[in-house]
Image (cartoon, rainbow, N blue to C red; front, side, top):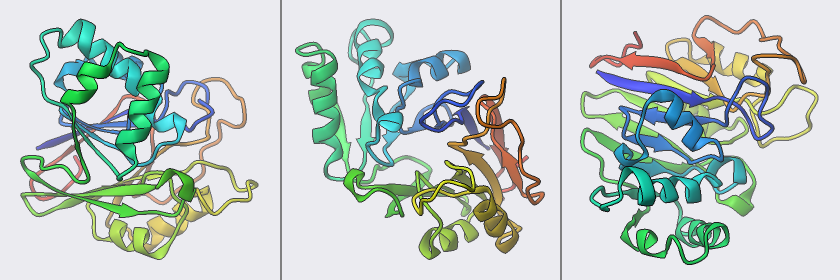
Length: 254
């Protein structure tokens, strides 16, 4: 059984009632490290020291600006003895950019812990075969998604930030479980994010894939833009912070 936790579901603008998009798998793998990462982990009862793998999708601020705080917490609170290993996986520029970010945030304080990190392109995680693939987003931040195939034979996917395009959708169609971003409403003119109409088309094309929407613009508490959730097909769940999904050995979402 695999446990997937949607620790945060909001886009960069923090719709009401939401923290930044943030995903945990079996309480030791996370996707990205947003500004609200520590708050999300605290709320879920997950110690930062228990995170051994971070999968970076891209280096926009709402996806990585929590990294210095995450390391600072490990250094001074949850892993003071420095016994826990940490792997950060991402494109070739991730190490340089995150190191620069940490030096800006806490100059001189994080140099030692940064040197202990295992920086890799694709991590070796027990029970999983990981694949990082390019997506359709701002090329300045080297955007990627992550496809993860479990040793039991089923796959799940995280889109990262991306607009709709063939390779991503084909990959989603091969997965039992997909976490897909929906960053903007219909009236925003961009090809770099999914809109509600894109999600509906995607879900209708692949009705056997359970899809959870993250990085959403829709408010959960009081209204800033809108609280209205579109009438999606039945295989789509519009994500809320704190949602949990259990996936069995057959890839079925329970």
